[in-house]
Image (cartoon, rainbow, N blue to C red; front, side, top):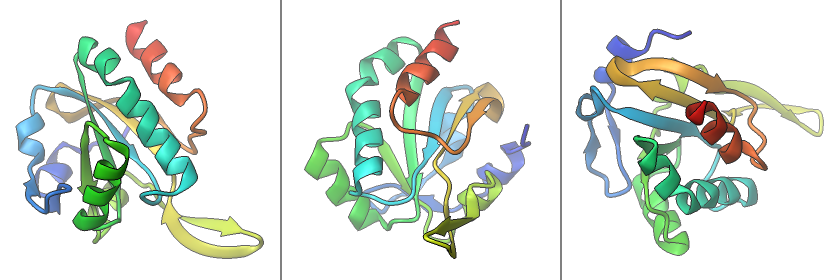
Length: 152
């Protein structure tokens, strides 16, 4: 697994309000960090709503949800307000976090190659230890997969 502790503590990212998001505040906490390509697109909206709709389940299991994309804070704010999302979205416009987690990858659509965020989820425990990761995530059934893993 990736060793992220020293890397993410020095990262400069913002939340949906444009305020600095400090990973130090998550020390000794458990959280789900999920990366997605873009706000307000069909797959990303479905994924965000799935997390939001299951927030109580995650809270009861002791987890916080945090979403990450390269969209800026104002886009995140609109996305949260439009869909009444109930968790933090991190704006990683410089792709620092995406690169640490190796989710900024070459993709291909209709034969054209481009760089983008690979939909991925990381289950992180105290002291920033990655317990489990999912890459190339398919939105349908993903929340259930995470909850099943945490519960067992």
